[in-house]
Amino acid sequence: MTEVAGTVGAGLEPGSEERSPVRHVEPVMGTMVSFELRPGPLDPTRVTAALEASSRALHQVDEEFSTYRPESPMSHLRGGELALADAPDSIREVLRRCAWLKELSEGWFDPWAMPGGVDPTGFVKGWAVEEAGKVLTDAGIGDWMINAGGDIATCGRPGPGRRWLVGIVDPEDNRRMIATAALGGTLATSGRSERGDHILDPTTGRPSRRLLSASVAGPDLGVADALATALSAAGEEGLDWLVAVDDYSALIVRNDRSTLRTPGFPPRA
Image 1 (cartoon, one colour):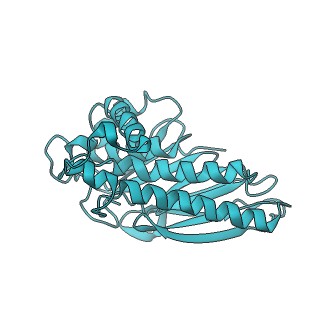
Image 2 (cartoon, one colour):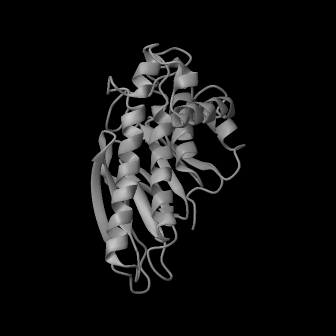
Image 3 (tube, one colour):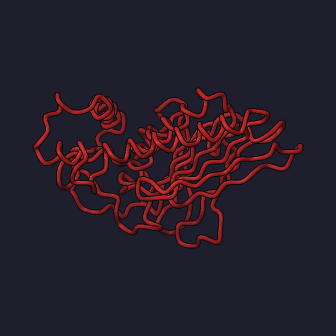
């Protein structure tokens, strides 16, 4: 995947006694996806089955959307071997949402401006985690956190009186936290810290170096992921359209390592 936040750690806020966690790490989509569940009294067999189904959902997305797999429908679409009308429903739905996000971000999120053909990767990872989370919730697990290479989705709480806590790491010093946030939703971070200049400016086709990183919090991780990508490409001026997006807030790290936050960031659960 081209979008790896790689800037977020997670933990628990001090409080009352926590429920026994269930943890799992799944290698998929070019990163390590970690699960942390608080299933309470739910039968362990049911929890294991839910984790397996949730992991399968991620692998299915990877199989359909990976631009590194020549056999994937997305690769066939990019290569002109597959018409959009004949593509899986999931691809048509993702591209529909990407078109909306392109408009929302004033063109700074533009999968159609990527080299080699349309590439919705900047939305897909977050969207995939949302789909995996729905599997857990539908199985009766109401308290969970999924961390996909730094893009984080949460549901419920880790225990009574507690909140899911995440920390945004300094892009140039991974021993230092820039900010912490108590999540009741999602957080996506995009930037140059781990993979260098991989964020492309859709207006030029060249790498954008306007920011070190951009983090976006909000209720939907796919949307937050795309907006973080767009903001990282647009730079500080992108905050003008970001603040107009209801329920989403952001933190940017400038090239001099100073930060700027929109109202409401860091989010509080």
